Length: 299
Image 1 (cartoon, rainbow, N blue to C red):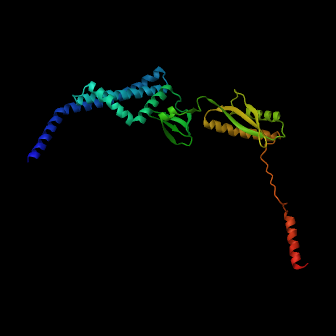
Image 2 (cartoon, rainbow, N blue to C red):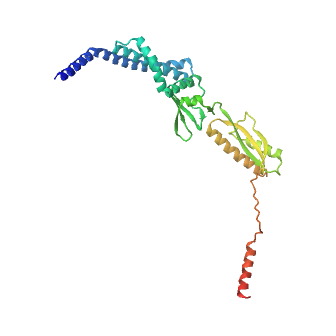
Image 3 (cartoon, rainbow, N blue to C red):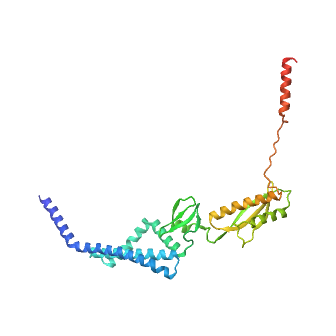
């Protein structure tokens, strides 16, 4: 019975210790609830106050998230000190300093994305609703958080990209400006007049409503193709993908119609086939078959 008595005595002491520390534990939990309420209240206040300073949306989001995280860090430390009186701020800071090394190695990617997210929100290389492209991922920026960025592709799918990838890789912001230059190639036959063809193409492109009238339409004879003189046609239109597709469609149709009306040939490759022996026509083959039949019949 002695081991049983030892166990019961240990349980009794644990219960007494728990009851003696119960007010501290309850007060620590109350501090956590207060921290949650203060965090929510601070977030609501910052949502109303920060726009008055005319800060960028990304900076407002950064300040809100940092303040929320800071409030929770202070609240958790205060609750820990209340629940465990043996802990002092100095011991807590020492433990944090020693543990930060192990945590840094264990959660390297998380901290890397966290720091990259802060820098992206601070520097703002791209904004919400911008159309960006990074390593074969392209779409509209839907949301930027501390850890990742949400990109909505043109087919409707959402891609969640870690901020470290966007920070370390080249990012093309296609909607950084309202206008974007588009280029297509068009060929005319070698027998056509180059200057006349250029004039016809320029007039056809300039009259379109999807082409920016403030910038010149540029048409240059670029190269001697395999079966045509190749023209490079360049114009400016809206920067969104749908604007580019619509404008390209109208330009191709207008150039084709203008060249056809002007009687200018748009060539296509011709192929010449050669055979080692002369080919016989259907009539020649039929005549040979009739002769062979007549010879078999003895006519």
